Image (tube, rainbow, N blue to C red; front, side, top):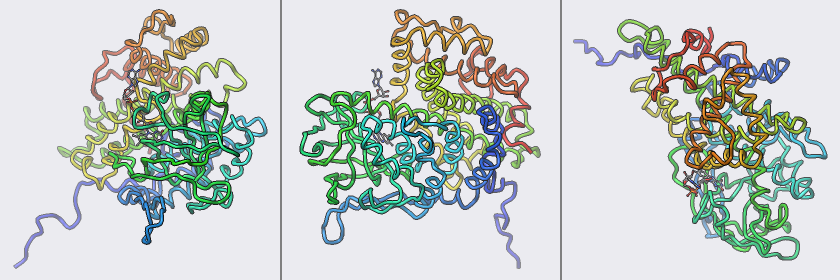
Length: 542
Ligand SMILES: Cc1cc2nc3c(=O)[nH]c(=O)nc-3n(C[C@H](O)[C@H](O)[C@H](O)COP(=O)(O)OP(=O)(O)OC[C@H]3O[C@@H](n4cnc5c(N)ncnc54)[C@H](O)[C@@H]3O)c2cc1C
């Protein structure tokens, strides 16, 4: 007697794995933005990069690094203090590839004596791609890349560390930085009593011969296996930035003690620690009392990275949803051929088009800012607005993309569950939503003419009257209560402007759906001004 299996031996009507894809070639919004940044002659390298990060093996490393999160080893078997974090080999493989690609440093490759970074947009394209494979290991890469902006306030320290920061051969060993082929740097600002309000920091810095001794606690300090940390502490002259290396100049371990690793919602491949310093050696970076100004140089760059990375995460989510929908048949028809699914996918795609164009346009402003005051004004005003909008859009968008997969989307073996847990963090760290909105107001009130000039230009390019959108620059008329609205509108206008530069003609759909439309709260309801088919074709071109 034969017994039929209740399940077929091969599961029917499931989409194949989304692996061995080219994360550059298949991404038209990214390719358009890269072309606008003038990277046509780099297309071959970017294509190779996109293939490497879309490879099955690379995506599998991302899964393994998250399913096997890092572990803190406080002491060794004999009770000697270790303060070491152990990572799965997959995490090391991710770091090896991404450091080889220079994601932790490439803007400083040709910075010269003036320490003026270049190539933000070129790096942003790669960051956008790499984050789709695995977002957690972006944390040390982003912080290392940004750290030199703060270190410049202590030129001797910056010069000493620069060759190691530019090193491309990942070296995870816990040993003095000067013995390593390459280093990574982290940042410790947030204390138990306050993160946003760093003026409330109570860590103390006492001047000693050759440096300072730092004593205090940090509530969050990510990537604790970094070789040094930029830390805020109260010196005699006020809040000051310090560089705390894992090893003191005499080769002894520095007094940096990890209490525990945070048990986080997502971002699980990355370690985030609680830490104590007990007379830890530190070098002063910048003047005493100038700590916030110094560290903000770094934070401006990490905020750009948050926007770029969230745009990358959104891209992966929508590409995955489109891939699944083009295979899955429901009521005998492919989902992607059914009108309401098309409306949903197209609306999601529009959000990604705007986020990608805006993030890359912002990276270009960073490149142009040193020689062009109007680009510097754009970068100052739009950075917090772009971080606000893009990072806050990501969780909702990933959720809707997840739903396109039905029940599969909610299952851990499929990547959207991990992506969903990852998505909120870029909005929280490096300045949470309200803080970004308030920072936009600060930029307006400190330089109203520059802000007005930026906003007027954005309006011209996208054919909109900024005043009608509530974007009138009158510091007296702007209250904190309106900051979120102002910030969101500004970011939407900037995204429409960035899309207007492109050939795809999608700015009209964006303006109609996101600035003029009825403002439906869920994807799939917006009027897309006839751009639906084009938006869907551009997600995964044949
Ligand atoms: C996974 C992870 C890793 C992290 N890694 C690091 C790290 O490596 N180094 C580091 O220094 N920090 C790190 N952080 C900390 C992070 O930067 C802070 O959590 C964040 O800046 C917010 O600070 P807070 O938690 O103290 O919240 P609070 O400052 O208490 O803020 C709480 C809320 O109040 C809002 N708010 C603040 N001020 C105002 C205001 N004036 N008006 C209205 N609303 C306001 C904020 O937007 C926020 O939503 C990490 C956080 C996470 C989640």
